[in-house]
Amino acid sequence: MSHSKNEEVETKEMDIKSMSSSRRYVHSARYLHKVGVPPKQNLFQEFKATVRETFLADDPLRPFKDQPRSRKFVLATQAIFPILEWGRSYSWRKFRGDLIAGLTIASLCIPQDIGYAKLAYLDPQYGLYSSFVPPLIYAFMGSSRDIAIGPVAVVSLLLGTMLSDELDPVQNKPEYLRLAFTATFFAGVTQATLGFLRLGFLIEFLSHAAIVGFMGGAAVTIALQQLKGLLGIKNFTKDTDIISVMKSVWSNVEHGWNWQTIVIGVSFLSFLLFAKYIGKRNKKFFWVPAIAPLISVVLSTFFVFITHAEKQGVVIVKHIEKGINPSSVNQIYFTGEYLVKGMRIGVIAGMIALTEAAAIGRTFAAMKDYQIDGNKEMVALGTMNIVGSMTSCYIATGSFSRSAVNFMAGCETAVSNIVMSCVVFLTLEFITPLFKYTPNAILAAIIISAVAGLLDFEAAILIWKIDKFDFLACMGAFLGTVFSSVEIGLLIAVIISFAKILLQVTRPRTAILGKLPGTTVYRNIQQYPEATKVPGILIIRVDSAIYFSNSSYVRESGIHALEELHGSLQKKNIQLILANPGPVVIEKLHASNFANLIGDDKIFLTVADAVSSCSPKPVQEQV
Image 1 (spheres, rainbow, N blue to C red):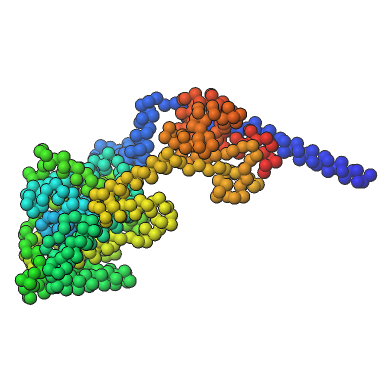
Image 2: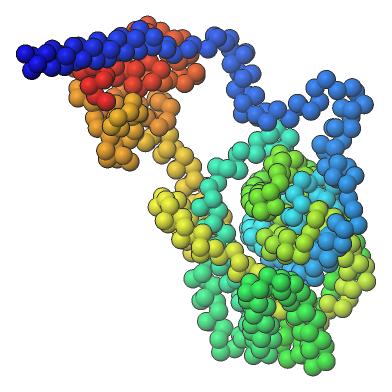
């Protein structure tokens, strides 16, 4: 009797649980949330929303709303010249930091500028000119506190290579110089236009991996080019690929090498590399590698002067034009056959300079935890190069080595660039004659030691670990630059970067989802092996928008795109159910009548709701 009563109680409890579970299922099915459809927009509204999202996502005009006209003028002026905003809180303490940093980077930039000008096949003074005017412009318009402005090795080499393909820098020196100013002008126009139109995202198409490879290849190419000055070779190849350079080097072993030059170059190169080693080992000695190039120039120049080593075949700088930048407005090509050539060279070199400056600015801003405005940066860089082209400068941008020294020296604001510019001004006015006996070997040694830092092995190894395709882009850019030319390396970098983007669009990642035990959560079964497939249902997530360009690939994964997908699955007696479509997707589904084709009852807010609607077993049995 008691036994039958116990069974009766258990039976009632099971009935109650069953009813409760059934009610929960009915309740959940009855109160499913439908996917919301955003208000329909006309063509103008849709275009306006797209433009706003693409170009004005940060709402740059927000501070101007509901402000009086006088306040709007002040805000606009501060937006163009950020120094007017942060300058109000400038103090003597900050100036001390900027003064020390400015003097430190000036000691580094002066010998570098002379060497980098040679990379661009320009006279030494043009390198110094480019560290006088552009840094002043940037200090007033730039938003980075740490970036140091001036000529850089990669852009100098790229500019020199592309310009020399059009004109001989020796036989057609005046025309070559005019073409350099023209390229600088259009580099500035390109940079300023990208910033003004808020098109900075375009430089993101050149992937980080491709930049690492290109920079590394350019560093090797630059170092190889310096073997001419380091070994004292007079007849040297104009080709930049490693095979041509090494042939030229070894063919001059018997009669082309100058042992006095080699002694000077190798000795000071060893000193410079040792100074960099000291600076890396102990951050307190950051000033050692910063001041080492200037010390090397002073000592080597004094040595050549007292020994008259120039009579023994040691090639010296000889003459650097004294005085500040002369005007070059009337030397820019605005008409004629060289206009298009200058424009093409300027656009390419300007984009590379912009990419390098953007990377530097973001790096140091992240280290100091402040924000920089990418579009303002582009306008500032573009303006300084436009003004620079009119004042005898060639393309300037942010320098990795100088910015690092600027940061380590304790710079507080862009005033450090003003200090550096003032030192360069004094150098141009009073000190340039003292560089007459500076040997080219020491300039070669300074450049080699400077570009060594562009070989980022740690970044390449990290790229290999993270993404093999990115590593392919990295090595493609590197090998193309080293074994062919800077332009080919750059072209390979761009092609591989675009290839990756196209591959991601046309071959989106797809995942088969399974249900995590005890939950209503569905996840990738490869990432979560414990997730189980729902019997009779195939749940696929496409990690990309479905376009005409990738619909075939999506079909090969088990589904078709839109109507083709629905029609094909109907023939196989398979239901098509959509879960969690975004606002743009659901709007287009309704606009194209596809939602009516499959039925509104086949579009659900969550995967769990979708599974509940078509599962052959109740949801609670799958939990």
